[in-house]
Image (cartoon, rainbow, N blue to C red):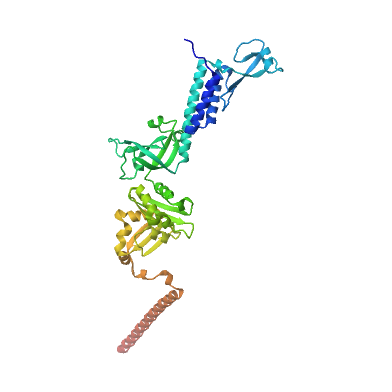
Length: 439
């Protein structure tokens, strides 16, 4: 059976057509692939012409392939790959002489089966690597944003505690694991469900391996040429991105999120600030008839959200953070980052919250250690000096107190002197009487 002849022009034209399709469908950089093909062919020629001697050019439009390598001008051929006869060399360069090196076109059909296989393998590897890089670059650009996915499987190893996870296909391109700690507690998932997730980080496994070169992870061996994507629904950033999707004033920078604290699946506190005095930051987040915040709450499975106004005055900020509980007074120590808060007696439990949640979230939101007391508790802890305010103690009051103290001391000294003189007089009289009796 007659073997089908290799047609270099048609084969390379097919390669170019395939590259055009890959670039259109998968975003693969055609120029990078062509560069890899050129390197592959040059590599395949190394055994014939020497390392780093071959120049390869592949036309990105026509697929025309040009391979050139230096040959030595000789009068007798010893190696057809590295030598060229003088008379043949004259057709290329009339001025060439014996012993010169002349750059010549190389017939790629002469590479042989082994060289072709080597080139093919490197080309395939280049295609795979560039496809991986295109995928990595795409999802790296989405880092910190919310993307849509679909649940493709539920993974639950009953032999391992808290090992439940789900596989999520992102944009019909990549399957990623959503781990239990990144899920919203209490949420139920089923295969085929649509799901929104935040891409928390995208890390190249090669870089990861360099950072942990002393730690061997058998699982990473399967992905040593891939990359690692971490997705989440439980992190505070997920709530922020949901609001950014709903609140136009956040997208244009008018309203900013200054701080957030969250206990996923239960409650979040969001501190916002408006750069425009005519725009109410809290109102913008809540929306008309609470439409905006309700859409966020629905996405979070009815997680409660407190949107409060941020304030540069820490005392006011702490008061706002403890809402919905009313506050009587707030005293802050900015150096120690501590705050003493007094609330009405009947609102103490509201200020602290169930299992301390309201106080805990307020503390995280404001970055203060908050001590909450009821009015009666605060009154019971005060002593008699607490009724004076240091700000009301004037210099005149201090001087008057000092004068009063000195007067008391002086009067006390006078009394002691008078008593002493009286004792001396009595003693003298007694002595005289005793002398008279003796006479």
